[in-house]
Length: 481
Ligand code: NAP
Image (cartoon, rainbow, N blue to C red; front, side, top):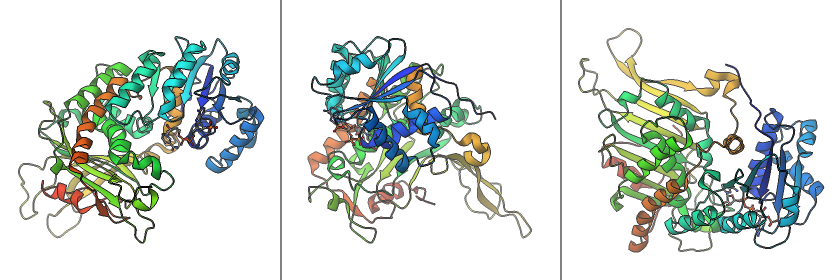
């Protein structure tokens, strides 16, 4: 297999929030890696902006220090060449300072991308000033970070603010989960193979489990996280996106609008979730360290650091098939996967072997991206006919060797922005539809004043999450198993 890096068109990438954590830790090191592999053409430039008063040399020094910390594998002379493409202009996003200088620094014959790595409260103001200063040309792109709103009303307001100055085809709402190799492979697995698609429906699928488990807690982000919680921070965007890619109908072609049309249909078909089908938790203080409440300002906080819920998609393909979603912090392992459980075989011809188990297809996002299919085989050797479950395991690293070293999700997504490919970005109606499903669920527990249950650090979440499955006669896949 040949690794191919196709250089993109010359671009000016204006990075708002360039001194911030995300820019220094992910976006700029990611751009360096694209430069190192030769994807950035000669005329590509990165113009960092923030309020901090410094010149381009000062910004390059800052970035050099960040590279030592976050991407220490860099090559010194390549980094020097990369830094010669990097400039800095101080700009106050909500004031007048810096905008004229920024406008003058842009070239007329390069793709313009404005990356807003700043809080959402700045999105509309920046879009407006880009428009007012004539920088928002019809071919320019604007990229916005998550969170895209706090609820449906705020997402609508953000969409309005952006659309007042940019067309929808210019707006790129990032969900970095969609840039992961396995997520895209899910589409290849489903739509480039004929094996699975005929089975991909309620006749053959018993249920689906989608898990995004983290070992980190909320330390350092407590104040922000406490206003949000697992439902807003993870389910509304990442897990709903994974659910969409698993459940959507085959798009007529692999184009951004065809794919996103199908995803919106899935979200709009999501049924309201009953309270009995939700389990929320907060990790408690324990041997693993401080508890959730130690990191937030409100000692009576009812925000969840864990949530599990059972969703149903009301359409012909998925009627009656539960999609169990689960995500949380300070859990046993860092693990993200989609597991499709096929129905048990209807009849066994093997006497005395007990009930047969259905196949399980697991699409692993992290760690060790790959795909596993649980199958039943005869145990090898003498001593009667015994069956056992084995995993047909395809780790991309083993199967593809160096070619599995795919770019980080951010790197891929930024290059898609330059190429003008929106397939892996959320459309405005998609973000709104997801909030329209999530909002009533949150209102429900807020109105009832529900408290999340406590769970131990290093566990799989609260007891209620296990019960949610047990009641249905099913079990979660073990986290870190
Ligand atoms: P951060 O560390 O607080 O950085 C914010 C950046 O915005 C700084 O460069 C700051 O620089 C700049 N800024 C703030 N107010 C400004 C203004 N009025 N005008 C111009 N620049 C201004 O935040 P972050 O963690 O990088 O996050 C940035 C965005 O990405 C947020 O929307 C966050 O939710 C999202 N995000 C972050 C992560 C992450 O891992 N950090 C992950 C996913 C999404 P000055 O103070 O110098 O102006």
